[in-house]
Length: 66
View 1 (tube, rainbow, N blue to C red):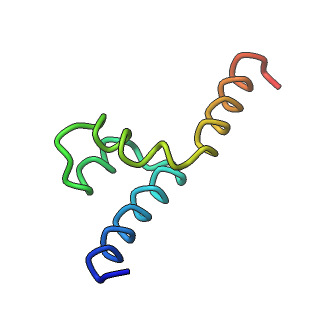
View 2: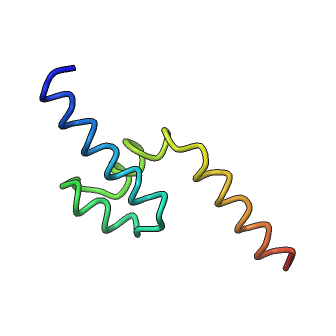
């Protein structure tokens, strides 16, 4: 792995960890220097399947109250 690839991996990990810990998508977008929230979410969210599961669980709790 080159230094450039290592740097890119660190940036990606930072964005992924921010999303996992509930940082608002707008904040992730601004920190990553992207022009749109969609770019940030499309770039980093697909690698975190747990985010989908957690969102589904939160929505289920909200709708069912359990």
